[in-house]
Image (cartoon, rainbow, N blue to C red; front, side):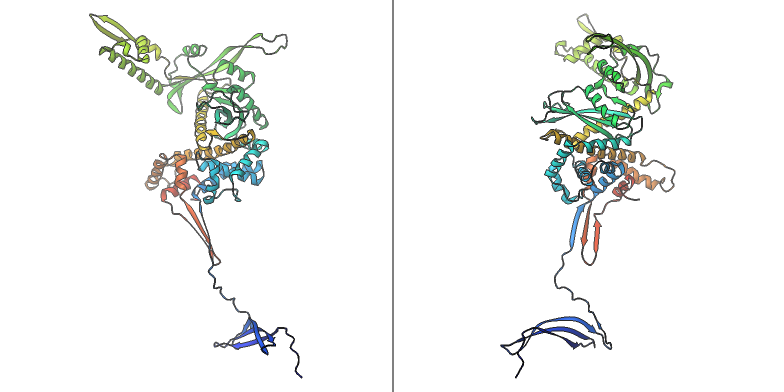
Length: 572
């Protein structure tokens, strides 16, 4: 009697001889089918082979897949991001941010700052689209909601911003000269307490918030900022902002201020706050003009400015009296009493001969134009108000034989143009005449940069809905401005070095000078925004497959490569 089938699959090895003499070993699985009464094939698996003349089983290579593998390909715009990476690294801004907060928050702030740097006057909501083609420090990606949430968190907890200010202050000298710039940022919001009606520098009749920024005059780098209500006077805002510097381990700095701060009350406020200052004054002020008149011959060879031969300068030390009204009773003095004090001041007088010549030429042109009109018989009633003032002040009119005689009053013209080209800087710190001029000029450059910053960083009219998000937005704009100022400084350094002999024979030759002069000519026509647009066309494509990885970039012309090498972005 036959044995009953178990119904379980059975496995055995099967050898198959190939034409090349190798023997393939298969593991074959079968199962008995009682209805058909024979074993059915279930599966077979190649487990190895025995080479011709051999005895051991060796493995075989896996069968090549018949499916078509799709390569992983990524294209990113890298021309701009390479420059931004270089700015953040070389300026120390990125490292200072990483020291001031956690890595994720620092990378988010960098991403927003770099977006604003590369996209002038664009809203932050465009960052979602921009990061698709550009690498940002926060690799997980930024959304519009994430940006606003970050700004709100930065405004609620100012630890990050104050830590960053302290890190930036470390880079300044121990006795730094600090420029102060005040500006107003307009807002449509009716919910922000700081947004108030006052003097709006944009002249758009909107309520505004005041922003005060402190700059290191030497490096042009912003150190700190402070937000104030829009109706607070500048001098009070500055004195409040200076309290921040006390926690930065800095000695009392020299404040470099523009002419908007010049008044006796403001000067006294700085003196009473024991604050050193350098500000532009008004030559025709009733207490400065007599001092200028007493100066004996400013146009001397010994008074020529060493870095600007069109300027002469000299310094006068004076003792000026101030009066103020007491606001409280103390030490035998009652509230409301008038107090008189004398304080030492230094007046730095300068004569710009080139500007004086231009101003005199302009006055002469106006006088001659009006004189010619009168001689042609034009009635005085047809003259403009300005022309009538010229007639009254500088012309002598006489009727002779029915005709009008017109002569120029030489004494009046001489008196009016006597102080053309003069300007004065007022300080309460003893300082070299031309060092004071140099520091004030550096301050003017930072002021110009801040005006450009309002165009770059979406800072014309703020759309923040809360005070916290407004503070955080200002901080991100502040970081972006640090990027911009560093790039402008390095761009200026590069321009000054092009086509200038340095003693290196490989550099000092006609071919190198030709290339550098061409680069300089091109740079002089390009703004920062145009430069970033120009390099925004450089793309990098990466294709990754199992066979290998390939990467290539958009080709650049020789001039572009020379620029990036001279700047330091590319290795020479």
